[in-house]
Image (cartoon, rainbow, N blue to C red):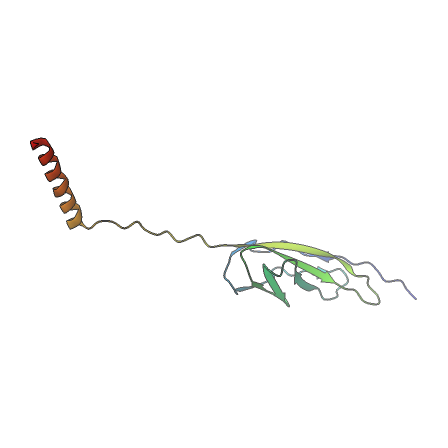
Length: 125
């Protein structure tokens, strides 16, 4: 009987390498990994609290670095391949800018008049 052969996985860097985080949002693994044996590659997440994987679709769970793991278990002819990982940054959205409330033109005019009156009273006293 022939001994099982070694195999490797090629898993290129993900494109895009960073995505805006959307709770429950999904994105495809791109590009996909390939095994030198030609056997199908399976995907998982190294941190399921950050992202989860089903097939080749990733679901965002939390904003952080999502580490995708490609694996191939082998068969009678091929040994299991060493796992290979790639990362995608799930970036939190920037906090919205809240404008500072401003005074209306009438309020500014009233405030100017009041300050002028106070200055006049002070000078008169």
